[in-house]
Image (tube, rainbow, N blue to C red):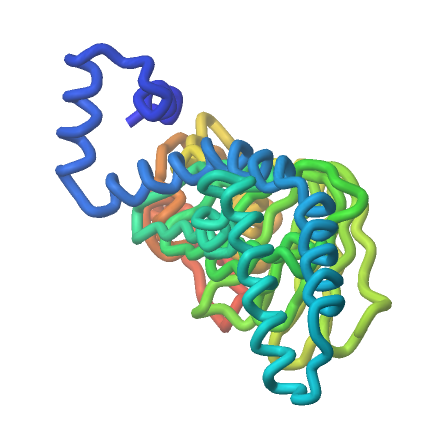
Length: 331
């Protein structure tokens, strides 16, 4: 269901018929309910932070100190445990004052500290807005966890799978994507990270801005990427390969879920597949590069599934050796 329609429902802007449609959709599957809950969390997190900021902590603390001084004037305490016991009563009153001053704020702290999680299954893609305002598109079979914390200014995200990020700029709060001990650190930018469980690599492509990619080998002196560059880090050896593409936006074709080719040359098609699947094509005969094909595929298709369709033209065969695919012209 359209995200804007769901937001209207959460704001109470829908009529009875529209509200009924949302509630029926929500009951259809647990995944639908989770989407609605995540939108609710995103929508109201700003209001909750404002409530926290509205608490007059200084005034409450002054009252607390005054109460302590008044206690000290009345009697001197010889036993430390007794003194603490009486102080703790005033401290409890101070904390209660914070709760009262903030209304429901204290009860909402647990929500602020809870992690924000998005999951997708095979064939499913998702788009969401994180609590800090950053936008994320999640590819199929992926998991994203956004960690909320009062104790760190960093915005920490754990990613398993693939996601495209448009990060809200905040120079005081770096945005860090953690994937298999590889860290992609940004301040505000647009980039794609692929870190699938079945692959021994993390692939970061920068579309806009500046990112630094750190690994256990580089420590705090990582690789700085410029727009249009892709960094491929092997998570076994931490060896890194820097690649520059003429069309780096091709890595985002998965967002729409379709690969559409209309009289594209085989070279153009394999260039796209190299970026999407982190593979390498080698042509035994350069004449194959100019062969043209028309077709539509799902981005969830494997390279083998796409190649098996294309090779039915009887123009070529292929052989795989790890991540390298050799294309051989038929005679």
